[in-house]
Image (cartoon, rainbow, N blue to C red; front, top):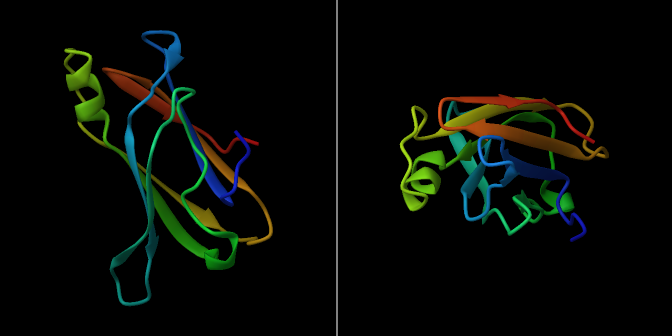
Length: 116
């Protein structure tokens, strides 16, 4: 699937060695008013990806956050997790660039980085 959004994500459940499908994801932008503004939502596909969070025309410089509903994901697997939600904040400085924010996930830990 080709990315349509300038901000994308991918979740790999490292405890299972598989993409994490069916995870709800929210994208928000920090506003000058001191509040988060919802920019987009999505659910990871069978490959663990969300590629349609934001239209290119809506991309602005600023502080964004992705929130992953990991609690419901693990509940569907009938597994417990220490992190019911994972939130990742990042800065967009160049609106012409693509920002890929992968999440490596397990029930008791996670890691993220700026991907390509």
